[in-house]
Length: 315
Length: 288
Image (cartoon, rainbow over all chains, first blue to last red; front, side, top):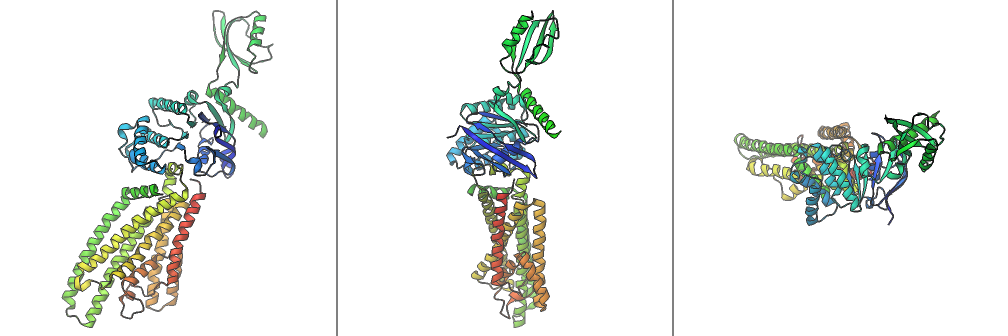
């Protein structure tokens, strides 16, 4: 079996040649949490809906769990929490889960057991026999999450899974995602809440204006801009002008003759050379901290780079 | 497919339109029963002895009264069929409720057929109860004066045509539901049903006064939407053969002076099958 649960090749879903998602080629490794990042309207949900066969691709191909998208087989072990979670409000939570369980082919006994488990996992235990029309938005999102987990899926699409949840609910969902990964399941997480994604994602893909800007291991992508924070005694503010590998500097703090600088290097592995030059120049270096980029910084870096490329191409 | 049929049952029962229609149908049956009882008493009091003329008149009244009940019953059934099924796909797409169902390991054909079987079987049950309710009232409340002389086989044949009406309407409603929005689909279907309804009367009228052009208008309207022919076949089966000069089947506004041909019946059935076929095809190809 392939190590990738999702493989797409130039997958596009556009409306009259516009919008949606365009030429998306990516792989999602089995057992990982893949964060699909993008602004509102970037094409994240369109991509997910195309993978699930709700939308028909206009171009390209893709497989899910080894089967071509659109086929019944590709969806057999898949769970889905949509962004616009709407469920028949005339059903109770339990009835909804029972119907989904029946469609998934679960026996009555199995269904009852699994329903009991998932409602506890999503924190709906006491309210599952109430009609959905009486549920708050947060509860509807929780019942949607329970639906997504019902069939013990290998791959789970969560489209903005915490949009209606309070901070405690968000934390619970993050913990749930981590648990699912520990169980060997793959989670495809769509969100524009970068701070939330940062703590749970192993891999990320960044989509901007319908196009995939980059994708890969999040920790590797986070080194896009090699930066260090240096605490040193240095009186001159132009200490870096003769260092060609220093791309940018920013004075963060200054006190008692010491200063903290955020230094952006042109590539990884320049720290020893930087220290050597500083020492040679007579600077007293007290501390060097390698700066880890936040997901937000990584996201902005790639989006801005894409914007620049587009700008150059258009002029 | 079975889970979708079950969800469809549950949905129909949960929806207010079904409950209201059932309650109003009970009220209609009650009213029909009262009308039949009074008619039977009046006929008995005023027409008196059983001469040939009186027998003819009684026969005419009783078939007209039952025909009227059945016609109104067919309208209620048709409206219930349209209103409960025209939004069954479209409204779920509009609200995105359909997303999580279709994201399961199930084909869209299975989903559509599940909807069709759920809706059609529920509406057949409703139509059977309504039809037999009307017949039972006519037979028991009408007594010797207003009860139409009909055999069980006539009732069954009439019922067979009567229950085809909601089935055909569900097929066409699902086609509209897979193509367009609930409101648009509902309007189009009610207009089509209206064309068939008016066309049916125009055709019967044309036949009564021997106006070929009116008959042709009726035939064209039946080709556009052939539901009226089912009602005509149903009354024809119930109230004897059309070629019998003494038959009440051909008399009055609810009778069938111009009988639909077997080709029209075949056309009607084909109409439903083709509508369902295209409903599935369009639903398979569309984005939701």
